[in-house]
Length: 354
Image (tube, rainbow, N blue to C red):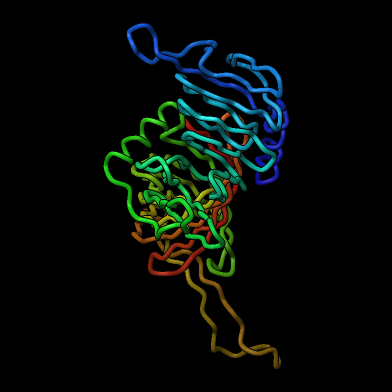
């Protein structure tokens, strides 16, 4: 099942080649001042060496493309990297490894290594959601992180900014230590996520195998996980699964939370296992043996009827997600469970955001 899922994901990823970058949506104010989606706007242009071109939805962008906005917002898909929203009064250039901002504020939701350069400040990430723009005074730079972690560097010094936090860099200064966003900044993030059309929930299907060294056996199973975004970098996880060792079947239910660190997530869950239970054991006999072969090992059968049992436990998980186009992803997960004994599980599967 592992190889089947992996092959299916690779086929899905290669079925349609994404452009290097593409104008995905444009918003501009109407005569009454209400922001509406439009197909093109003179307030968003592609700047060339000698000419400018009005941006339109669906326009392909190449490396080195420079976008300038006045009274418009532009959503750009960065191929398989992710997407970004260029806000009004901004000037940005798309580079091979990220974006070079001249002025303005941009919201990013990206997967994989990505760099943003702005006023001598560099923000380096490994898959996250964040904004880079001027501070409240207009002279410095603010980097605010919604999910994942961003390393902000200037003048040879750097700080790491985690989910729900921000850092500021004053002109000619080094980054200040990260501090928590206020309610206004978090509200702004929610608004930008809505503009990007980012999923607030996801569904994953994982094929699972037990880790024999911990379990003392070999189980195979299937887990279905539902995840819902609670706060920047924090998700609620609800899941249901089925496992079997070819003798007994069991249901695995869990509820927990996970912290998102770019493509990596770390979770803590409460677990409930419901399944068949019987009285099976192995004992060493002490009766007369044949020759000098030593004591014989006798395995008893399961005594009585097989019934249902329940076990409550806790588990920790470490998950890595490889993003694919169209909100798809390939995921691998390591899970360690304690419910009176220690057990382990590996999972591989696919996920979809909505």
